[in-house]
Amino acid sequence: MSKSEILHELYKACKDLNFDETHDLIASAESADEKDFIRTVTDFVLQQRQQRVVAEKRF
Image (cartoon, rainbow, N blue to C red; front, top):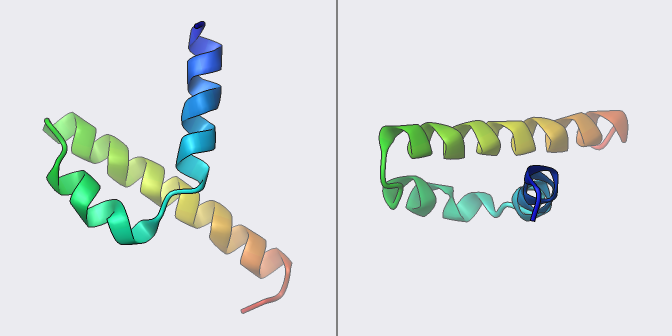
């Protein structure tokens, strides 16, 4: 599998992130870098959802 395909699959997995699981994911991270990665992905997904809500005027 190419890096492009891996990133695409990672994106698909992350876009449906359940924020209730975020704390457990961070707690189970194996390194500080992995914790930062999870936080960054979580922030990105949340920002995307917020943009959709604002665009749909559902706030």
